[in-house]
Image 1: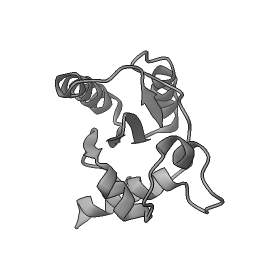
Image 2 (image 1 turned 180 degrees about the vertical axis):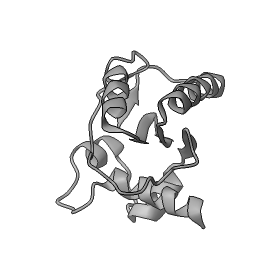
Image 3 (image 1 turned 60 degrees about the vertical axis):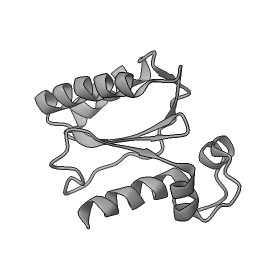
Image 4 (image 1 turned 90 degrees about the vertical axis):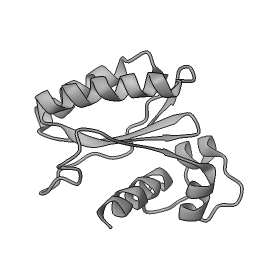
Length: 134
């Protein structure tokens, strides 16, 4: 998860997605990018060496800052095997419906979550993932 360094227009995001999708196809990486109140939430999957290279590039990308790694690990099956990079802009009302929060302060919620088993932003990600398969 990271903050946009500057507000990206829809055209900027379309160009970013085009670049990401082309690169991901070459590297056999799949995943999803969510935009929530100026924050990017990205989930990527593929072979570990390729993911490590991509993550290093993400860490040094000037289009965002305050990068936070929320989770990592191994999976037997890809969640986004048909998506070089799915994309969705998530509105406040959708986040509130998923998390049940009426007052939404993303910095507090995402960076300093209450003692919950699953990070709140991962709940948003998984909710969207499940909606793709239905």
